[in-house]
Length: 620
Image 1 (cartoon, rainbow, N blue to C red):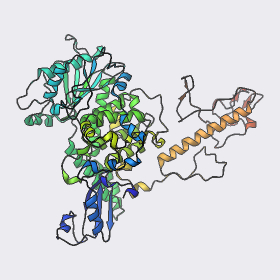
Image 2 (cartoon, one colour):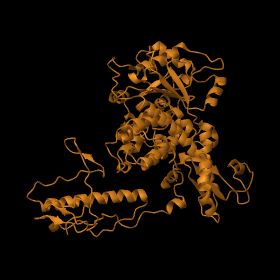
Image 3 (cartoon, rainbow, N blue to C red):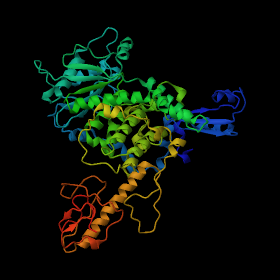
C-alpha cells in the first residue's frame, strides 16, 4: 500500500460487502462464522480516498485487520524509521522559537520592560497539561493570579498571547470557556486578568471615552445557544457585564457537525465512477456539494477569521478567541487570522511556524482528532478540524495566488502527513504527551522535509506582499468551492482536463528536445512562466551583444514574473516581454541610426528606442 502512497496508518475503515448483500458488514461477521467469505474488500482512508478490491480477499482482509491498526502510537511508522532519519530531520522539531517570534513583533519578552512576559508556571505541565511549557501572559498579572485564572477556565486553558501587532499594539489571545456553570459563577481573578489584557494593548484607538480602559473583543466561536447550554455542564461564556469587553458569537459548528459534513463529502465519491446517469449527476453536482454543508462550514470559519483579522489590523482592537476547550475552532481562527494580518506567516517557514505554535504546541488533539492507526468507528472524537484549516488556507491561495510563498502541493503534503503516521510532528495531543514519548529524539519532523523541497514554492509569489491581506468578506466567501483536487484525487472527472499540449507562447527550444506535456492547468502556468523568463534572458543577451560598446545589461535574477530586489535592496520593476513574436528578434534590427516608423501603429520613434513606445513592436 505504501508503494501507492497510502500508509496503513491512514486506513479509516475496512468493509466487506457481499454480492448478494445490500450493505457492508464488518470483519467479525465473517470471522465469527456468520456469513460467506467476502468477495470484495473496500478500504476507506482518512483522506477520503477508497479502494475496492475483488476476488479472494479473505487472507488480505485478515492481514489488514491485524496490522492496519495499532494499540499504541509508539507502534506507528514514525517511531520505527530512525535508521533513515538524519540530524536535519530531527532539528525540524525546533523550528519555532517563542522569544524570536515575539521579538520580531517588537515584544522583548526577556528584558522586563514589555507589557508581556513568559510564565514558567507550566514548566512541569502541572497547571495545564495541554498547554506548552512556556506561555505568554500579561506582565501585570502575578503568578498567583495566573494560577487562579487557570482554575476558572476549562481544562486550565487560561488566555495566553499568540500575536502582537507590530504597529498598533493590538494582540491576539486564545483560551477555553470559563467554568461559570448553571449558577453563572463570577471570578474576580478572571475579570482582573482580562483587564490586564486590555491594558497591555498600546493602541490609543481602543480607549473607551470616560473609562480610559481599552475595550477588548471576546470572539466566542460557538453558536450562542450551544454556549448557553454548556452552562448546564459547568461551562458557559463570559459575563455580559464586563465593562472593558464585548462578546460576539461566531456560530461555527462543533466537531460532530464537521465530522458529519466531511462524511457527506466522502459520500460524493460514490458518484465518481461513470454511470448511465452521469448527466443528471453533473447537472445537480453543485446542489449535492452544498447539501454536504462543508462549504457552509468553511464560510463560517473564514468569516470569523476575517473578522478577527480586521479587528486586529483595521480597528487596532485586542481579540480573545475561544470555543469550548480552545483547541479546535480557536486554533482555526487564530491561525487564519495571523496568515491574513502578517505576511511573514504566508511564507513557507512562517506558515509552518503558525502550525507549530497554534496547533502543535497549543494543544490541538491530533491523536484524538486524526487517530492515526485507529479505525474511524472507535470513538466519536475524530474530526477533520486541521484538514478544514488547510482547506481554508487553500481557498485563500486559490483566490489570492500571489500572496503566498507556498502552493497547493505543500498543503496536500501536510494533509497527507497528519494521517500517515510517518512524522512525529502531529503525534500526541499536546506537548506533554510528545515529551513523554520522546518524539523530538525518536521521530523525524515534517518541517525539515517541507523546507528543503523546492516543489512547494509558489512561482507567482511576490515578496513585497508582506502587508495585511484584508479582502472584503464577500470576495472570499462567495468564491468558496470544493477542494476537489484533494478530496477526489484520482477521480475520472478530474483526470479529463489535462495540460495544454501546445507549447507556451515564448517557448524557445533550439536543443531539439521535446517539450514535455504538463499534467494540468497549474503546471501549464509554471511552464509558461519559465518560458517567459528564458525569453527575457535571451533578449538581454541580444541587447548586450548589439550594444557592446555600452555597459552590459545585468542578467535578471528573477524568481518570478513579479518585481524583485537588486543588490542594494532597491525595488526594480519587472522586465516583461512586450513583443508579440514568439522568438527573439534578430540583433541586426535592434541597432538604429535614425528615427524609425512603426509598421504596426505608424508611430515615429527616436533612434535609440528599440521598441515602439505605443505598441511595443520592434523595428522591421
